[in-house]
Image (cartoon, rainbow, N blue to C red; front, side, top):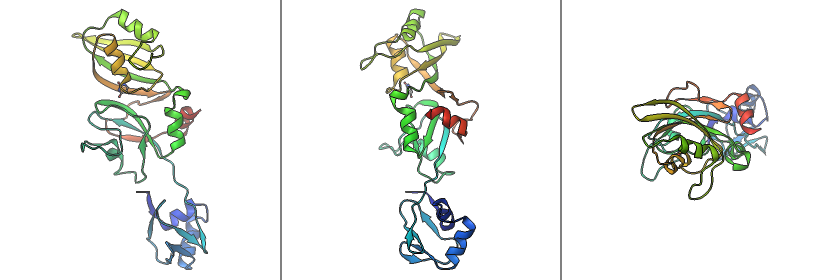
Length: 239
Ligand code: URA
């Protein structure tokens, strides 16, 4: 379903008139929705589904572009719908944003943290396509079996079943009771990559949180909450 907006907003967004002028056009009977003249206020239209004409000329809607970051909680899928009925990240934003935003790339069901969402396909392409090489930084909590030589293998680049990773930046942040908190920055975005990298050096990821994509950081955004990206952040991601 497309975004549903007031008719005067649709007309204004298409560039045909200011919102005020659009109201006058409606009152004067110069606007048709799906072929029928509309003169009352409060009519809403669905972008991409309804057809709107002013003085017999069809308007091309300009889709408002959204660029947001969500702090994804564990227990949500990053697909638009789920065949097993599990909660989706879309549900976390749909109460507040009516446009159809999709996740940029994906995070595992039980991975938390920074997830970008947009309705701009070009933006999504630039952030996810391997040729643009956006670094992604994660905090991984890992269990026993961790060795310095294992971490050095990650630093050099490690062979997984389907590819060899680029050298990763790896730092031990904390260690407690046989568990380690590791900050790791990788350059690719392959399926379950961080989990597979730690498996390859003989340890297991117990929890995983993405804290940055390129220069854009999650910061202290609460769990399950989202915010709009700043224009500076959008530019950093697409340049
Ligand atoms: N690497 C993983 O293993 N899982 C994610 O969700 C993201 C990166």
